[in-house]
Image 1 (cartoon, one colour):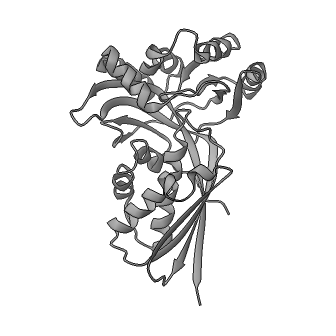
Image 2 (cartoon, helix red, strand yellow; image 1 turned 135 degrees about the vertical axis):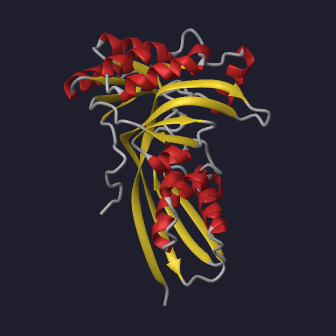
Image 3 (spheres, one colour; image 1 turned 180 degrees about the vertical axis):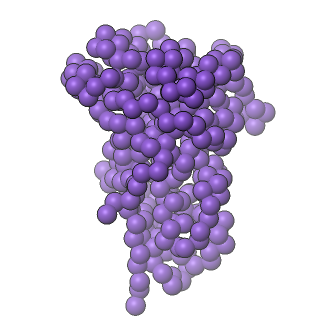
Length: 300
């Protein structure tokens, strides 16, 4: 008789409170300086493991997105690499993903799904891998996966694999606005950085690190930057959304990752909701909170 074990986890989105690209490696990968933060927009990832399986089977279903089913989703590759790492010869796993985090938005949805998969498999198989091991495995499928295994707030360097814990950001309300008419390809965004030779000076990141460690939201806001904004077309919706957030009282507003989602920090939920209402015609909006590292992401 088959015995199945299941674990369902919330996979949070991430934002980059600052994002610099400091150079391009010979292998084509880019080095970054970033402060990353998880926020309360979640995909839901359910992982079901069949015990005493014979053979090897991974099945992935992404509700509402059939183009991501099976081997097309990063979650499939994450499961493969986990079983290779743990030298598991026989396995049968079913992964079901409910997408809420917008795709091609710079919010790390696919990477967070992969992080949830490797965390769930570690629990379900009783492998007892350390967080450092899970982050190293995650780095094999995506640069944002190590941070999304870690969660909370962190300084991120290298190509995304160097995670340094830091002080939590001060409590604030977050508004995320995803333009309805504008998507950004990560590959094309990095190609634009390369074409312009626009790399970020490390000193800018040092200012942000100091602001974060001092817990100073005004200094954090002043030091925020995203190099990818410098290669956007002049008429980008990103700039209109940023301007509207700031006009509506945002402490700061910035594009996340390579775009095209924009986020803003607000002093109150009321102010964030008012700004969200003003942006509804141009963007899909979410008012949410900052997620901390040590909270539970398991769905009961």
